[in-house]
Length: 173
Image 1 (cartoon, rainbow, N blue to C red):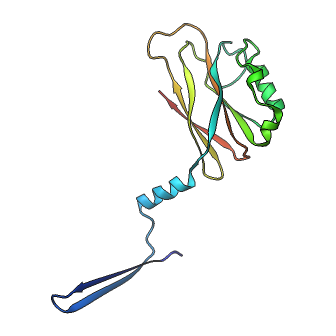
Image 2: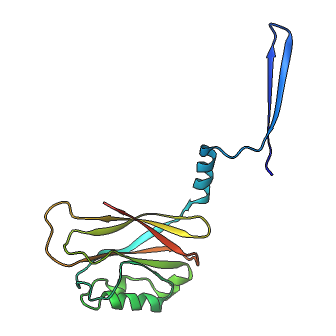
Image 3: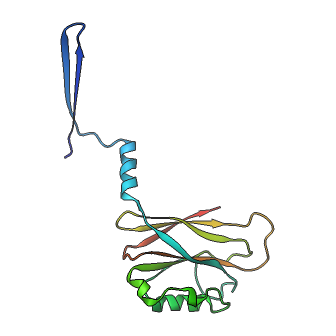
């Protein structure tokens, strides 16, 4: 039990007397204190965008909307092969070597297949509460006329190696 002791001493020299109050409190943290605790518990995690673009295979790549955690060179090659199945999307020579996965993981983020061009996906922040990793992603739609082509936006980011589960929080603009 966390007891908070507050001592207040009020002295009034004008009347030559003093009053002292003492209280013990088991009160719950204020909203500000709770907010500060949440900020401390939700530490930002460094991320880096490795690749970003749109696939033009009209969904024939067979990749669903969502995210894929990649923890080895063989998993990375498998994902790139799948992404490049219809059109060459990602130049595999730009990807890191296999010893990269001793320190980092990759997260492949995919939007759903869209009926026009001009859509994009972008990671804004990454956080962790020590048990779970949260990735904040923005999905943008075209603001004017868009090409009539099927697209599927994607982004590949790197994070420090972790076994914690990943949750993606999406904001559509």
